[in-house]
Amino acid sequence: MHVYETKHPVAHSADEMFALVARVEDYPKFLPLCEELAVKSREQREGSELLIATMTVGYGFIHEGFTTQVHLDRATRTILVEYLDGPFSFLENRWRFHPRGQGACEVDFYIAYSFRSRLFERLVGRLFAKAVEKYTTAFEARADAIYGREAATLASQQ
Image 1 (spheres, one colour):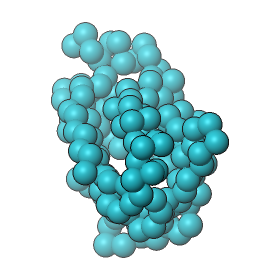
Image 2 (cartoon, rainbow, N blue to C red):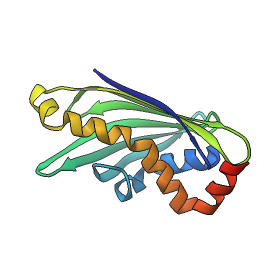
Image 3 (cartoon, rainbow, N blue to C red):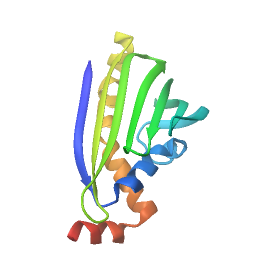
């Protein structure tokens, strides 16, 4: 099993970063290897939002889709992703956003996964691991583009 976890300070608020990560439909615009993302269902449940989404990742001639259940809890600024179907034997992903002063937060990102097939692991395992390690910086760059880099610079100087 592969596990990657990082805590990364960013110069955007916890609410802004939560909203950015929660907009899963935008992932193909900026997330490494993400070619397509389709939301299959969306419902409100006990003050939270629950999505079923299928993401297609690809590189070269390899294109593979997988489906997850995404639990968006705005009150706790937590996003939990549970695996439903695809090339993994296991996938669990968690985002937490902790406020850190005026207009800043710490992004806590965790992912654990293993591929079902050894052949698929050999074909894309290393590439997928490198992409996962770039996720937090990809989201930070997206936040800079959407919310403004100037605001990020000002917040980091406080």
